[in-house]
Amino acid sequence: MSVKKIKIGTWNIFNGNPLGISLTSDLSRIDKIINHIKNSNLDIIALQEVNNLQLLNSLKKGVNKEYKIYYSEKNIIIQYSFLFLILFTLYYFVQNIIGLCIMFLFVNFIIKNSTIYNFILSEISGGLAILVNKNISDKYNLFLTYKDFNEQNGDLLNIFNKRGYQKLILEPKYKSKDKSKDKSKDKSKDKSKDKNIYIINCHMNISREYSLYREKQIEEVEELTNNDEKYVLLGDFNSPIEYNEFHLSKYNLKDTLEDNNLYTWSSENYLTNSHFFNKKNSRIDYIFVKNINFNSSKIIFKEPIASDHYGIETTLLL
Image 1: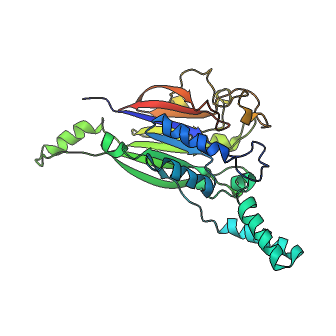
Image 2 (image 1 turned 45 degrees about the horizontal axis):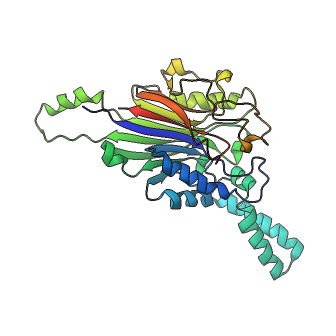
Image 3 (image 1 turned 120 degrees about the vertical axis):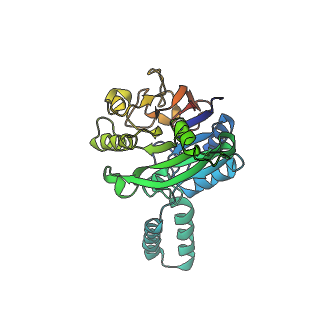
């Protein structure tokens, strides 16, 4: 029986000025992001910081032929209430219809698309999205089931922009024409080989050093793997190896990137130069697996630079 090889990746595609003070997203990088994804030939790619509908719609348009996008859209009543409050406050000072129109354009096309607004009042739950190649179901004989976004507790920023994780289940299609009593025996014999695969995409709290919130978030997603199923935990964990916040041996998880000298956050990347919290090379993005064989991971999406993070890719062997 031939081995199925599923290429899977993770990438934080932060699309804004690193200082978070630009009035508009860095639209020039969206095309680079789309080209990286299309040229990667990944079967599944988990993305973080897909914070606004403008970016999401650009991604949909750019990769529509190749990928289906799974995400959870937030109830944006709070966002639009916030925008209305800004508009009402501005109108109080201008108090004329022309000024109101100008303020409306300013709020709708500048404030609404600003980096700060989209990070704090994200329109996509957790800023998380999973892209799945449209051929994967037929190619690997799988059913796909998307589970909605799950919130996690975190720091004060979580009041506005909840951290959390999303889950995608890959379920093998059992094909058998034998309807005899022996069918259940055959199925049980194959069950160990054909278990569901759970893909969990997450983005943890950021901190310069130790974070109790982040450690609890990490252990919460690790706890999800506390059974005999096949798991892939991936995303931006914001936790360098030296912080020792992972419990891989406890949960029988394996880090697919075997070279600890490789990194996804680089001081040489011009998009990280203005960040105040980490100015050294480190790895804060990971792909962990449980009960799945794999080829060693590699770093991807380094050139041309399109994000303040590099991506990671690995091949699952099923």
